[in-house]
Length: 173
Image (tube, rainbow, N blue to C red):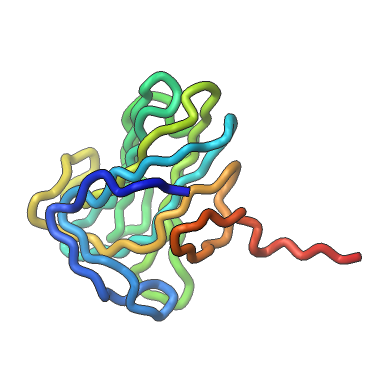
């Protein structure tokens, strides 16, 4: 789970429609968050739901896991395609998937590995171009940032306490 919020966006407007029919999303211009988290050694997947506002790109950045490594991946919210990645092999994979029934919403995810430095930071922000810097004027709509061990899991709403990410597992006796 994520720890404390360490910075705030350039602009943050709440009560936006989210991809599940609620009003819990935020319109964001610029840097949304530097959230700290501790992960288990191995593979982790960071995801967020996003929709184009006036910016075409969402950027997910991971920092400081394993010897200060840093990587960014751009996601095109107009075309539904994964864009550029920088930071070497820190992001081992990335994906973007349209949310069925909610036009324009995508779930964007990056996967990374850790072996030694298990506490790091994650952030997301709006960008105007693939590979471009943080936007100071164009927005994205964002909802539901989630960090899972191993692969991407079904979204689980949380309110301060970590969940195990296994909401869809049924055990029959």
